[in-house]
Amino acid sequence: MNVLIKGGAGFIGLQIIKHFLTDSRYHVYNLDKLTYASNIDSLAGLESYKYTFIQGDITDSAFVETLFENQTFKHVIHLAAESQVDRSIEDPFVFAKTIDWYVTNDVWIETILNGSNRKNDSFKIK
Image (cartoon, rainbow, N blue to C red; front, side, top):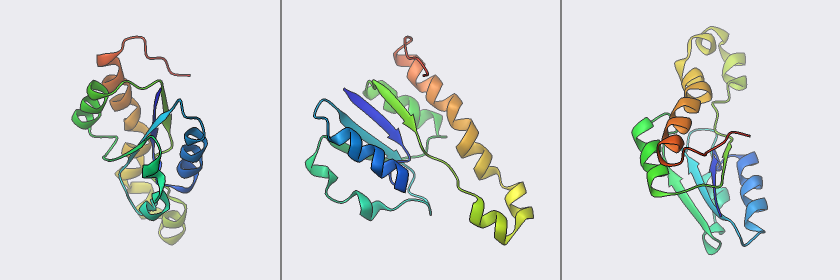
């Protein structure tokens, strides 16, 4: 079974990936944009498992549609987000105006649902 974890290069994502890799039934696909919140070095050693890293942006609808056309996922776990805590403390006005937070944290829903539904109309959100 294929599982897609979005934001798997972050701390929580890595723990979820490791959990799935303990079960040989799963092939884990890790989709991450690799921003300031990611740690690519933490993923070292995972290539010996049924694991695939994909660098990409979840807000890029063409990219997401292609991903879902090429793979079928049993589960999709969303952990990708723009963390704004540090930025909001440093400059709350810049934080309030940033569009990256909205796009990454909200617009992804449309791109993932559209991409998944084009291939599999039985895809369900749980």
